Image 1 (cartoon, rainbow, N blue to C red):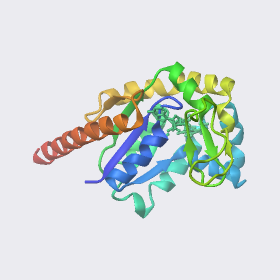
Image 2 (cartoon, rainbow, N blue to C red):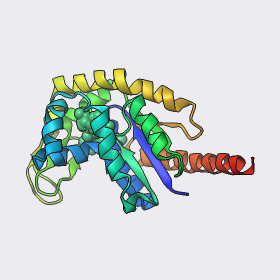
Image 3 (cartoon, protein in one colour):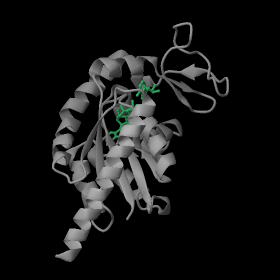
Image 4 (cartoon, protein in one colour):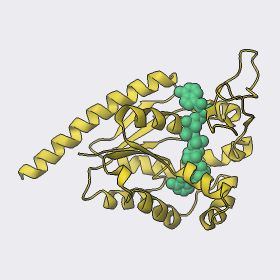
Length: 229
Ligand code: AP5
């Protein structure tokens, strides 16, 4: 049975950071809608042109566009063994369509990463991306200032355009309005889990592993009961 994980959480909750860990641990593909859209914007594709304004202001891209993008991505062979979705679904409509897409595959394991707004703001104002290797950095250097150079490749570190304080506030508002109802949608799901994302990254990974392994067992049990009926 494929392992299909959905990570949900406010901006800066650590979805991308943890999706990288889960990809490595479980040998599954990471599908990040934010990364896919940023690549499209940077490459100036027609999709990039359609989504650039919404992303820059912290609004959501429309459901129809997102569903088309994810439907195509999840039809590729590398996700047959499973995936960790970072950033999708974000609305109840997106979740309903994802459930339909998974009807003949394994159901998703939805996991919420809980982090306070204050912590989110702190993380995102400190986040920097390396223009050389693309690595994400967070936190301060030993001198207490925000890092200027990538410790891996020496490349310059830049801020994501939507990590401006006003845009982050807007992203948090959008999360409350559009994505909190999605958490309610998933709460009744057999495999739903919620993890404290404010712990150090390695502790969050451990907690996710425990939640996923438990949820996997529950999904298998539910599937075997259904097959026996
Ligand atoms: P997206 O890129 O998905 O942005 P987001 O959800 O706002 O999440 P972030 O990438 O900011 O944060 P994250 O949770 O991945 O945290 P990270 O691991 O980087 O989407 C961008 C935009 O695209 C959206 O605003 C929207 O416009 C559009 N979009 C995308 N998907 C869409 C969809 N489905 N529908 C509609 N529109 C869509 O960590 C953040 C920082 O904290 C890093 O510096 C990291 O090093 C640090 N950190 C991580 N974990 C910890 C920890 N445990 N302790 C301390 N620091 C930590």
